[in-house]
Length: 147
Length: 195
Picture 1 (cartoon, each protein chain N blue to C red):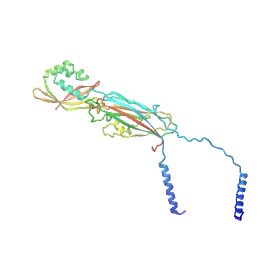
Picture 2: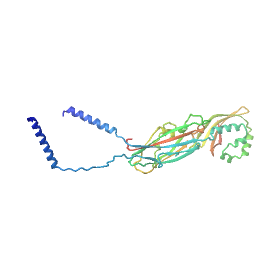
Picture 3: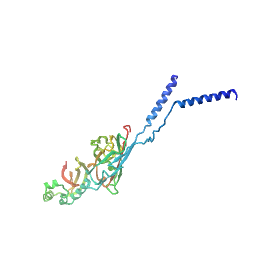
Picture 4: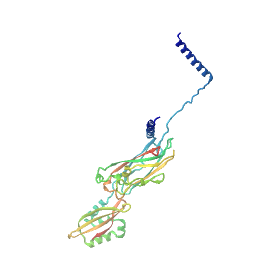
């Protein structure tokens, strides 16, 4: 056999073997894990907590106290709190949300928002309000004056 | 009878005699190899012993931080040795009809964080990459990748896939209220490592 003929034959054989290799099929089997439904319910959000605080700040110290958390209420009784607010003589005219609430903490159990309180005498002051989540509700943990 | 025909007849007789000699010289016996059945084996993937599994990961009324953990047991119930499985996910997010859940800025499946993902007891969470860049590994990320080359080489032995999903407590916000995500995992058992 001449060399060119042998070479062509070799190439043909190579193509045939490649086509056999590439057409090799394997089995597979498929199954599904269906209908995994993850639904979110309604829950108390920090935004709602801020809104509630804003409303009661313009209302009464008693209502504001109800929005505080367990730690706060352990430290201050309702009577002491109401007395302190009355003694300060602060009358809130308007509450503005300066910074929307931001959730933080490893498990998202903390939130903070900045409110600006305007009083009837025309002055205003910003406060950072820290919230903590208790039994699914955001409660006031404490406040910090923003200078 | 002419000379050519005589020669032809002689030729036939010679061949005929040779055949006769040959037949007489060799005996033969025939037998049959019967019932050669060429049937294919099967790969038969079972999830929790059935053709499919349902509702392994369900949360009916979740909120930030709530989580669910589920296990699906995967096995080859066929009669061909397989090599590995691969898993893909498909999510369908349904927005709430009422505010604030009706806002669709951030899809719920992007805040459903996968906190635990193991196969046969080994951590495979590193196969899930943060495709959407939100800082967590979530169901949306799982939908964008493929879990592959999870060994399954024995037969009739269950291999547990464990996953824990939670509503990521910081990223799950008011707009997700009333939303839901339905996830389907598709598991494929492959015979060969090249698949």
